[in-house]
Image 1 (spheres, rainbow, N blue to C red):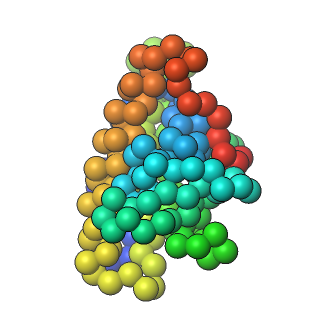
Image 2 (image 1 turned 45 degrees about the horizontal axis):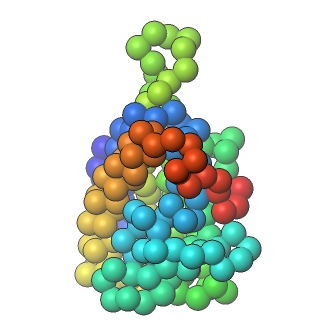
Length: 161
């Protein structure tokens, strides 16, 4: 499912992991630094926030991922400074029904949804849209890799729930 409008963008991908595992991955600020092209190589800076750098211009960006486990949703509060974060990006996790009804699903759909900020010009918005189209593939690959590694080799836990 892809949708493009002048004010919002959604892109999704199927992942062969349970929804809970995907939600944990998406809520983990250190994992974010492995798939978010605008916030690469994240480091914790306190209060559930991470700092990373843009692969485009090297500028620092700050993100506070906040998980709502009941709604299977992570909201990313994003900004150029720790005191100026906006909740512009969300990741939804949706279990996909198993083949045999009633059993646990080992597959989920992840949807990234972005809202265009009022200060975003067309070029910056197009870059964000294209990044999300790649980032869902990086998420899918990261979860597939995580599923093949022993627990001790994976990064676990979220920054803030």
